[in-house]
Length: 353
Ligand code: QUE
Image (cartoon, rainbow, N blue to C red; front, side):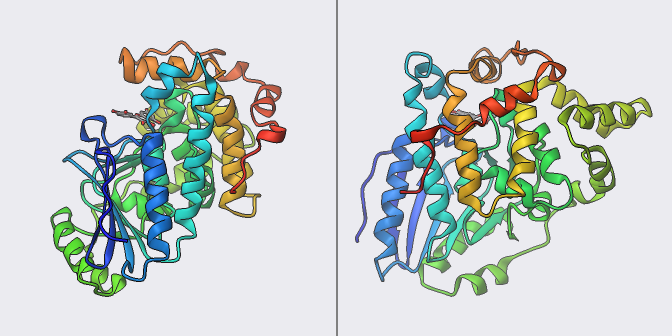
């Protein structure tokens, strides 16, 4: 396949030996739309069988972001009238996440800048996950009444100790070092080396050798130093017990516990309880696809639930950061509610094909 023209929102082309994907909605922090999912998916299929393409590189246009997530605004604007706008989007996005995980050629994701939610799904399953001093990586969905999806529960469940529960329930931001520690990335390079890296890859050099030659040590991490606190605060069998533990730590004046407790309390109680359940459950599942199928059950119901609209309104539309969740307190989220949110959806279960 030669150079492929696609819509402006994603630029897809072959440069020398690489298939190159550039997310190109910089004003929307490169948030990924359904059309972009389909174009990326088609490009990966075409390059799979193209001997001229030896590796795939994905990056984001603009100064700020690799990709801030899914095209949440479209779902917010259309989901009330028709929840079906979300279901095929999520189903195909998750199929793309799985395709990336099993891609037979090197898939190099350049997480240079903001990388959240759906942006994590486009990078974290790849063979070569690159971070820079500009990386800001998070799974912040609990703040908008959703849950860490795109295989997020799979990655979070594999993070050391209870780090995944902490990251998923609080949406805490990671820098490059944290992302490597938590299993979201492999290699740190200086942001200024990206241009020459892409040129080297296009010239057909060995991917691992090229990365090794420019990799540098990342900035100091936070997650390693926090391990003792994380491993005690999140070592519980309910989300509420974790919050209660943070309360106890907060009483001693622990700044991290205060901040983490307040952040979790501000997030959707249903999303926090669902994330606690799904991340712990993911540890018992055999593979990424089993995790995606469980995430999909929640996503399937998201556009007929309350909190997603309220979360997007408060965080992205009105930006008042004052969501009124239903139920409003973690204490009022029952096991029955969580089991119902993750109940089997019969004919509509997520499948790869
Ligand atoms: C949680 C999220 C998202 C988020 C903020 C959160 C998310 C997402 C965006 C986003 C940001 C800027 C845009 C845009 C979307 O923000 O998934 O279109 O211009 O896509 O707290 O999960």
